[in-house]
Amino acid sequence: MGNQARCVERVVGGAGTGKTQFLLDSMDRVRAEYGIPIGGIAFTTFTRAGCEEMATRAASRWHISGGLGNFRTVHSMAYKGLKIEASEMISDDSESLSWVSRVLGIELEAATSTSGTLTYKPLSADSSDEATALTLWTYARATLRPMNEILAERLLLGEQVPSRDVIEAVVTRYESAKRIHDRVDYSDILLRFSGIRMSLDGPRVVSPEGECPEGCQAVFADESQDNSAAVDMALLRLATAPGVRYVLLAGDPMQCLYESFGGGSARHFMAWKAVESIMPRSYRCPPQVHELGEQCLKRMTKGYWDRGILPADHQGAVKQSGAALDAMLDHVSPDEHTLVLARCEYSLREYAEILDDMEIPFSRLNEDGTSVNAGFAALQALHTGEG
Image 1 (cartoon, rainbow, N blue to C red):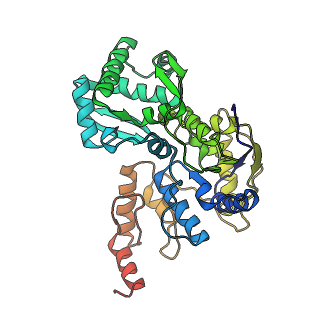
Image 2: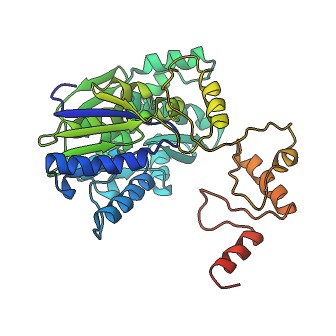
Image 3: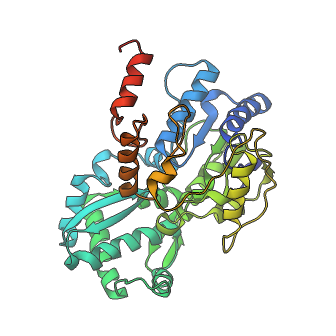
């Protein structure tokens, strides 16, 4: 890690082990031990929502009003340090999609942003190779790997990929247009901030650009198991900036969600030279659920190790139903809080229809706006005195 910060700790926390509370407690401990002011604390996690949630909880604990400017994603840290203008950004909005379509001379239907990478969906089969080439280029820059290596890997998995010549032509047009029109994408931000220059043949180390947060003395990074190689390099620059005296990385290598399409890998989190500790107990998962989770994890082809995390004290149960959705939902009671997970949006809609027929109130999570059925809306009205 080169010029590493004075103290680096790694905390492995499984599901429901109280990692968020531990991070807040650690911030208080480090502030007292090192004499670091509130403004000297930087916190980063995988999503903007996660940063905002931690900033709200920290501000409440420290009895301060206003925002905590250094609680932001790594992409946002780099964006701020590079002083990028919003008009320069290539994102997943309609204007950016139109710009990329014009540059490549193809029709793109959508661009999906996940973990700082962009996946492009073509409007027609004629644009498929170009859209895939651009997606692979984003993936190569996230993982800092040569394109030939990625192509060989995808072919081994039986995927249809464009030829190296098609990819080279697409990348050349795309990168030239960015230089001419002063545009940057998510990958550019991380690479420039980290001091990495990418070509189809792989990464090359150059001088980093931009500035690290002024006055930062301690860096806390949550959900670090999902960091891509590019995010990890940007985090390394933050952690080794002049003045940084303490670094804590938290995560769970068994919960990496974005390896296949976002380039995330727990191996970056586990490769840091750090003093390691493991959160000892789950406060969420009872023994039955905890055991089932470990059984599932043990089926991993690589990377599993027994972290020795104990289950929660309270009891629970695991029940198995047949394929019929309504048979499974028979276990749901209006007198209890139940989380229903679906494999896809189609199944989720089926679940909602069945719950409606059963007249069981429910709410939908992670949707724009409020999406509740009539029963749940009535309960809300009663609680607020409006019904």
